[in-house]
Image 1 (cartoon, chains in turn brown, cyan):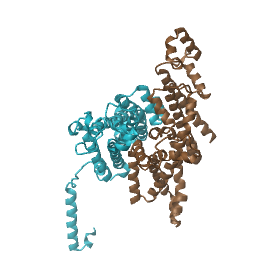
Image 2 (spheres, rainbow over the protein chains, first blue to last red):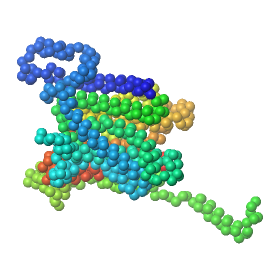
Image 3 (cartoon, rainbow over the protein chains, first blue to last red):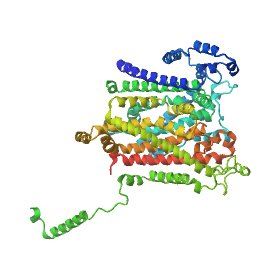
Image 4 (tube, chains in turn red, brown):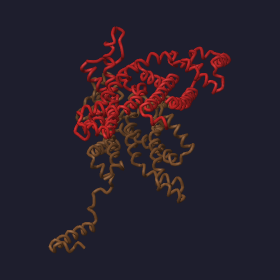
Length: 319
Length: 312
């Protein structure tokens, strides 16, 4: 197991190096250089070329490309992610401020979609071919066809604007004293995100439950005359759970990538919101850093999934 | 030799029956209305027929928008701004007095073009690379595999937005970006399929005949992988249409001057329009959802009908 884990980690490293290199290349190719971002335009106009050269040297910009790349890479490990172009804020601080909001939103969304998707998927597998299965399958397809933002807008119109049950957007207010007041803000975005992610989970859990139901030990359980709920829940679901764990693992990166649109609609101050703003404002360092962060999360999540499946199923390790 | 045990009358009836059976087998089988098994199977799937009908209706009303639409899409009429739906304007008018229905019909052209174009482009790149390198193997194969891994380790929307921020917004850029971010999945699927087909005996026979790699791989192997590829193209068309609309909704997709479904619904970012002028954004949203749903129905039917494990 240990050697498998080490092997898996070793294949991850070149991938991360390649991607970070591409990202660095992207930043280098962007118009302008770091000096012009560090001084105000008036100063820049009055600055002598010698002074600028001096500043470039002080920043290490005259060094060879590869040296700069490794300097930058080691900077990342020290938490030096560079600075935002729009206000000169350290990118680390922006990420620190925005990540918790995105994690909060995505955590609830993941929770909703996992529970709902599994319950509906199992129901549909148990009643395979029946009316409820057909209805659920069609509903699932409707679910993946409606654009997230459209669903969000309709919910916003109904529950926030017309019924006024929930706030229109934002995450918190200065006057709030307890988490429960703040919780009202997360309900709608998390439900919209969660429900639109449910269809995929449902499809997956249905097919893995169907797989499990065809196994011999379930036939044995049935022929022993065990009650149905015991067969499905205690025996079937346990087997069907393995692929579901995998599915959740693969959805972890959705925590960052999945909520970009929803955060816009509900003005949720998270990473997705910051990312869109950075793309709009051509704030390249921030764009690249968030992209790098999300790639790292994807790769780590797939590592986690591989290790988990290897733990559950020993055959995987030998490959 | 059993004949003597059969009573005479019985033998006659038996012979008559045999004649009938012979006659039936001589007669050409009753001609089926549609010859193609795949198509026949798809048409017996109720959902995919519904999907096909909706798909064609929306497709044709977009393609022939310039003939069918009641007004030119960009016609500004300042005295008719924000009209609710009426007989004159079926979907009402927007803030500049433009007829929403006409805009939706014309917007469909661009949105469908982006969706279908990206799906076909991505499939072309993915299938060509996947089929050839899947068959050939070697270092080029592992190189392309690595490249696809790099692309696929980004969450799709993050990569798309990253590329948009580098290249800037335009219709052509968006198509290229979608192809660039979408070829990986087709490539992997085609490659996997080719790897399994490669092991079959007929391929070895073809190789023994000395046929060129190109002929073996594109003429003899690829047709056997075409089912899942067709399904993939269908489903990725749906995905790209959703992505185009999401990006345009964020204001980062197709430039705003060009009417697309996403750009039309974009105005709903404004709370007062969201609340009081539902006709501008609700119908477009429904059209997008219906269109994508119809494609998904078609894709599902296609999957069932091309699956060789469900022959019949």
